[in-house]
Image (cartoon, rainbow, N blue to C red; front, side, top):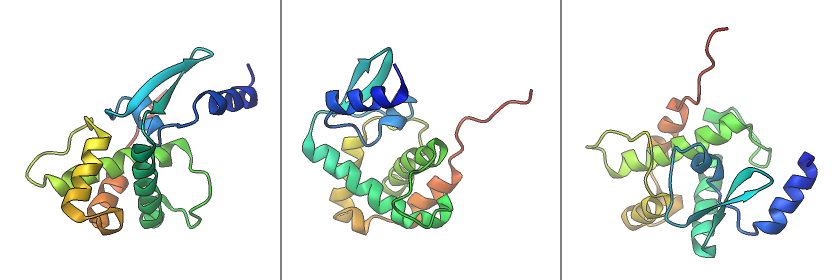
Amino acid sequence: MDQDTFRRTYREMNERICAYEKSLLSRHCDCSHAKKCCIAEREGVHCISDEAQEQCLELLETLRHQARFALKSNNDNEILSHGKAMRLQVGGLRGLFSALHPDKPTPNRIEDIYALINQAKGAYGGPESFPYQTLIQQVSAYKGRQQGKR
């Protein structure tokens, strides 16, 4: 199956794609509203709730705008590379955890994205009020898989 056919079929099959799909598939995060699905020997992630998907998309959009300098990206509409998308997703969630729990060490794995965002909304009001300085520090600090020497 070629890439275009796969993407088209995937979008038809999964009308509510998880905003944090890359992070979930790489096992950096988990979410109570995520359900894995398979197509053509590949995994995808479906969000089981419109509300949860909107909440995650709103956070990612706001975070992406705030983290333009850290991502070295001036255009909010350009497609991010996999590495930058992972920095934004995983680093942003780790930053949110750090802002909510400054006394705890930042975990390598976020246990429940939906619960974490709801907890932050309860503490700060909404994504526009989140402490983005802390989130962006974690976005900048996140290092994906490092290539070994050959």
